[in-house]
Image (cartoon, rainbow, N blue to C red; front, side):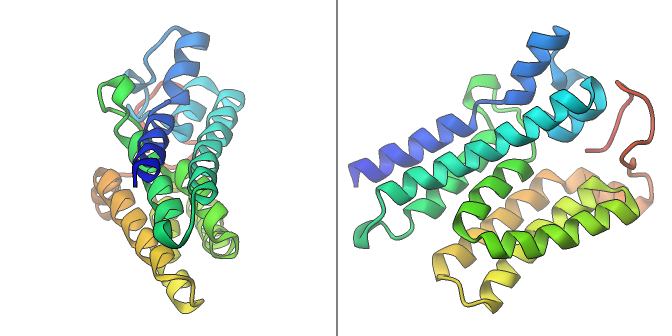
Length: 206
């Protein structure tokens, strides 16, 4: 039990490493949370700092999820069958509410991709294809992100994945909806900003 608690705590601390904040400080000498949408994530980094930093943040955030779940797998056993899922969720929560940055972080989608692709790659591919198509045709990153997370537990349930994965997917979807609640309101009102609209530094919805 002690090792499991340490693994979950370590995953949260890893998730709390906000690469968007760090890269923005190193490159632009700015707090990314005070620019664009105010979100400490890959999409806002892309819009404020450009493609290179945005892609770097996206990939690094994915790696956080991969490492956290892998740590859970390394300690996995009959006693800790939920540990990989809990470690992945801890990393996502750390990204969203980072202890190092006054608990103001991102929305956790890239870290969710990393965690879930390590748990159930096929489910992520299926949900990811749908999400990417939505983003391509609507240019709403928030819509694609929400649909991606909502589809995950459905696909996991249909595919007969372990109950721990399915319930982990449910928690992931809830976290994403909570973090995107303002975007959902904007989508319903038709005021959500689209990917590629506006100039760098202008307010965006994601």
